[in-house]
Image (tube, rainbow, N blue to C red; front, top):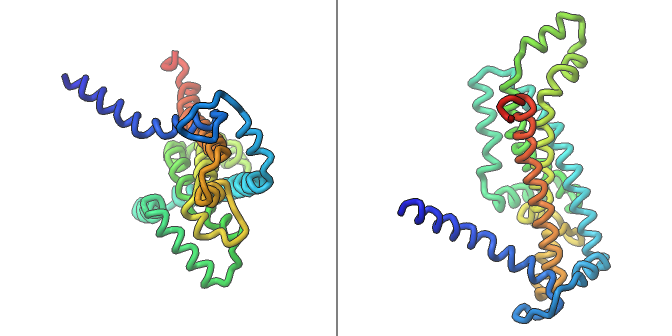
Length: 264
């Protein structure tokens, strides 16, 4: 009886979560513009989507911001993890708590705070302010991905490399960096994904005349829902899903490589 109730509860959760997304995906292949009528299977909305210059411009902005912000956040987050790992336990715990605040904070609060900060600094709103905002909220996710790997490092291997005559830089890239690489890649993919589908923070910091895919969809939906928006939303969902699968598969793959006997 308990198992049956648990299965029903799980099924209802998945139904409420994924039924709207499934409907969206189905409508993106509907030849009819009317949602209540199935007009046959078609790819014309996807073809029309890639002929829209405004959508393509928003796509270019989204990919550019996501890649640069993810790369910058990964570099900053990696350096921050190395610095925090060398601190005493109390200071490290305090800084980790401060780092986690942006992830726990409501996005609208972060967006408004950054908007007011940029206004007080006299910055012109545009791609630059969006980029700074995305780097800011991506750094905690990168630290969250790398810090567990940092705690698993054996400091004696780094010290042994130094004793054998290696420089600090060489010892880091030959000994420490390979062990951190899975966490760094996971952090980069997580940051890229978070930047790719962000709307609220981007909305408050983008300025006039600049759009990403999420803000473009919001603007177009206010004018009326077009079938091209179904296709665009489907592409974003599939892209984010693939990236999240890669993020979750990377640690598991690395663990199985380190423990081949257990994996078998």
